[in-house]
Image (tube, rainbow, N blue to C red; front, side, top):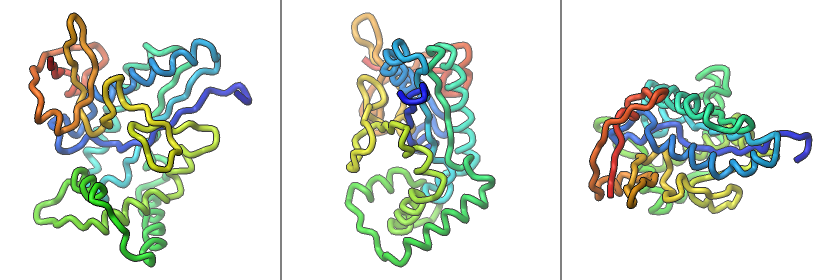
Length: 257
């Protein structure tokens, strides 16, 4: 590598726990399982390349209040707990492997600065008119938006917010830098990112799923289940206590067979 710098990995993701899950608004075992999985995947590099790995979780936080109706207070709870997981896992990682968390909203000097940037991009897109949406895109909007009492979902308004947010000045330039490798949970059509899943057994996004353990003979495998898988599955919950993991979603864990 040039300049003897760490290999830089970036994963853009929504800084929230899906409101449909009882674990919301904080992270749970899914986030921890994903961090363990990515660390195992990249450890062979740290063994042979001294500068190591810098793995940055690029959190989409500031838009959630406007696009998904996620209260700012819930987003802050998620971010604080997410940082707690990084703090917990870091001592177990190689010295030349570093996890960081860089939410988009925190790259702005203030919330007002972000809103001004977002509104500027909205005005640029408005003249283009209606945005074509597939059934799958509508389905994902319905899945992620927490409707307020009496609110009717406006697909066009939501997509406009989404597309404008993609173009704000302090989002893409951070993780799409030439010196960074972008990874994702599932493939994107533009082929600019490397699909890696979230565990050896799962591709469900950790923020929209729940971490469970599946018993296999005399051991357990980590899985991340979607809301649909959780609804169809059968689980027991076991109490657990691990020093350094004190957040509410780490006091029990779901077990399936």
